Length: 71
Image (cartoon, rainbow, N blue to C red; front, side):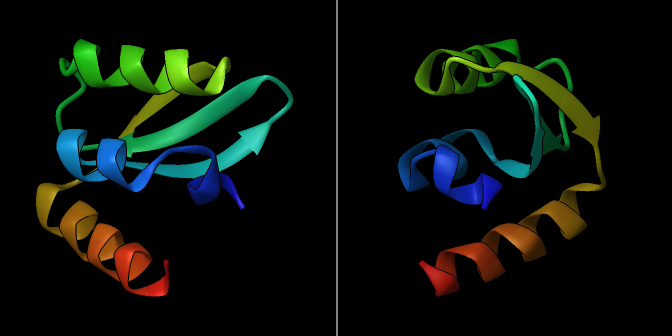
């Protein structure tokens, strides 16, 4: 599960949601693609190439809340 690759703290801090891992690439949902600090932190913590996928803020908040309930 891609969500488990990133700590809950980083998910909430940067509002980033891992979607899937393919090879050495981790695709993450972000509402702000200019949040390079958050993307870099995820890259550093996972040692994977991070590919941002832009989503609407309200949809990102819903999937983050759902993910936090399941942890």
